[in-house]
Length: 453
Ligand code: CTP
Image (spheres, rainbow, N blue to C red):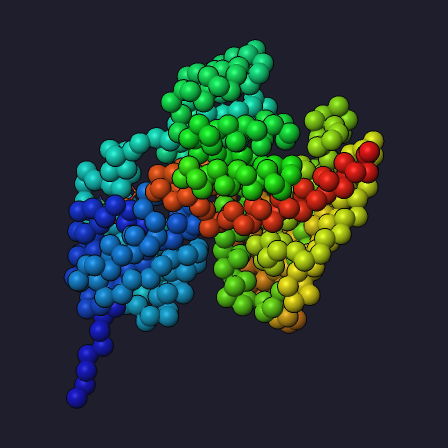
């Protein structure tokens, strides 16, 4: 008997808050063939292509599609270039998508038929999100360069509204607010916390982070705090305890952890792309020439406090906690202008984290494994591209991700998403990650203090 081959159709989308427009499209797609595969975009992939405001998790969106009895298979779309691979893998005959994408997927005609289907007028996930949207009202502590950048980037996150600013110098507050949509300015933290904000972003000098985060958590506000979140390990542990007790979100603003490419990089490694990891090497230098700048002041300026969190994040995410830590620092007037932090980890793996504010170097990262290595070009901490390379130089895999602004919007998006979904922790930067990074920085602070005395 000659059995007719099933006609396979594939379509992709975010399908946030599944609506009638999606259902119509999916039914039309099914009618084109016998077997329908639906690709649901992952949260990180969406973020990498500028969709920062999806309200439902990947898991929830996948579940909603799985419930549709006319859908035969659901897959998750995780990266650019996956469509062509899926089409070949599943022997797809037709790629279907709404006609808002006309022409955009013609490149897939090399593999199968491409059909643009009529879109349902008058409805979209964006519209539905706007209807139910409750913005997260954020108060900012600090009026410096980083706080300004934060406010600008928050403009790209629909869920975030910057409501107020606090700094001890009211003139700075007035200047900061001028020309923005920020409604309120405060010169003391008590009044600032009494106002009806949901969350606080802390970008004050390092030595104030702990006390301000503590006060904010005690006042029932979620906290996103610049690095280092605390200068002593015991202080971070106290903050975590408080956040846990009050059911609040506490995230350290190490932005790299939230960039889509960085998340994908970890997935490649855990899938064994380069075998067992033997060494993680990362460098972050930023020349700060003005010796009167905060970064050059004792006791908590210096390269380690300023920049150490980034390479230590990479080491922690890839190799886990350090068993032994050695610092090779170069100190000028009590401040470390450069530091090389060498750690040994499980199974003898090593991490080498180099930071500098008074010496410039190439800001790349290399992760070496038993099968190959990953190269992340400078600036690796704003991860957008990475390359997997092997002994055979002709065999190289390249990964490219879109990256918008200076990356802070991904961290703000994650912070607001956690608050909205009532999920206390972020898997992208767990409390245990924060504790380990902080343990090493605190260890260094203790050593510097002892040296100074
Ligand atoms: N779609 C449709 N009619 C609508 C909305 C979406 O036919 N009113 C189709 C899209 O063309 C696409 C699929 O549904 O083929 C998934 O689209 P998605 O981007 O997830 O939905 P939107 O509602 O457009 O989402 P957003 O507003 O977030 O862009």
